[in-house]
Image (cartoon, rainbow, N blue to C red; front, side, top):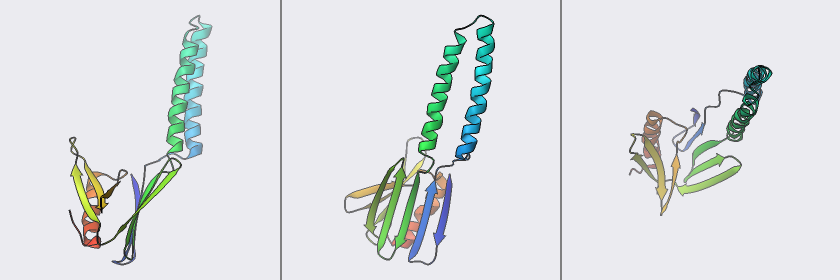
Length: 158
C-alpha cells in the first residue's frame, strides 16, 4: 500500500493510492532469472540421474511463475486518484491499461463506509445514483481516516 497525500487548502485536495510494488522491473527479472536458473539446474540434475520426467514439470512451473510475474508487471502502474478542486470531486482509476474517471459535484457527494463480512471497510463515494469505490490500495485505518477527511471537505456524510 503506497499513497501520497497532497493538500494545499480546504478547497484543493488530492490523494493517489498505488499498490505496493516493492521490486522494479529489473529486480523482478533478476528474481525470476535466479529462480529459473536454480529450478533448471535441479531439473537437469534429476534428468541426468534418469528421472527425465522432472524436466517438463520444471518447465510448467517456470511457465506458471512467468505468468504470475507478467500479471504483476501489467498491474505495477495501477493507481487510484481522488482530487477535490473547486466544486468537483473526481475519482480516476487506472487498472492495467484502462483509465476511468468519475466526477461528482463536491457538495452533493456522499461518503459511505461499508463493512464487509470479513471485517474490512470499503469506502464509497456516491451522488445522483452513481457510486464509485475508492481505497482498494489502502488499509482499513487509512480508509477510515480518509473518509473522515472527505466528509469534512465535501460537507456531506452518509
